[in-house]
Image (cartoon, rainbow, N blue to C red; front, side, top):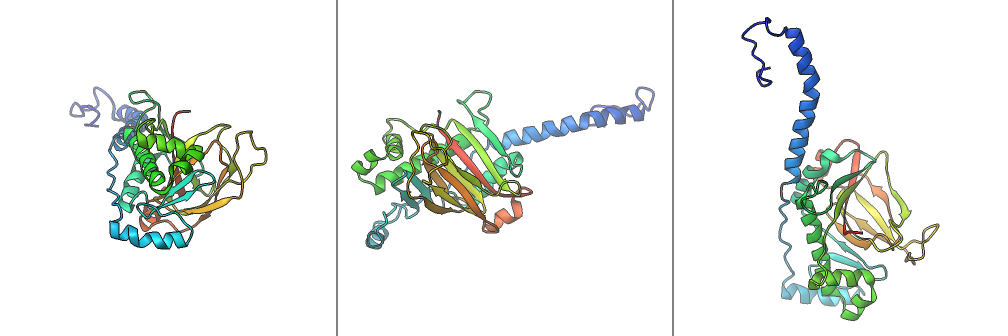
Length: 289
């Protein structure tokens, strides 16, 4: 009552205790929501402290190159990326450390309801819906890491032949920097165990997906039931996506599906800190349409 500014030293001559209690009960939920909203705002504005990703030494790079070539697989400059050239997909393994994942979870967990998608932030900086500049910056950093992998693994001709790789190359050169326009999330749990095969649009939609929680199978390239004219399908490729992994792909042109999930496969911190009923969170960073 003192916090509300009510003076009880004058007894009940001003307001009865019953009246005061009724007023407090009516205002308490609103005050609680306001405090929660303010706490969420402060959390969302807190910069995500990314750890530097060291490059392989010259000796390590030389040692891994023959093995990669013998296996018929491209070698990543950092040893952490898988490229699916036929569909322009890049999987960054271990894009976020466990500490970074914990920090990211603290920024989005208040928005997570099992089985429901959610909006985090969108639009240009300074607009009403742009509520978390650090997460926009995180998405752009991931786009830049993908660009480094593409340039490090592919020849100019290979980059030119694939629209998604060519777009990320333009980000690398500075010709068209990556600008994250929207940050949204998909929550998996008891109400959503997978995501059916689909495309997001009928035109290119370059997307960065970042995983938290249990691992999943992520399949690209399987023809949809009613393909649009710009759909690109072929022999499907399935990649296992772990917590902390990030994947770049053209969600508008390339069919993709999530599932099955692998229960209990998330890191130790996730099992203790995950929101109720939630098994996996997929954060999506997208450029303007």
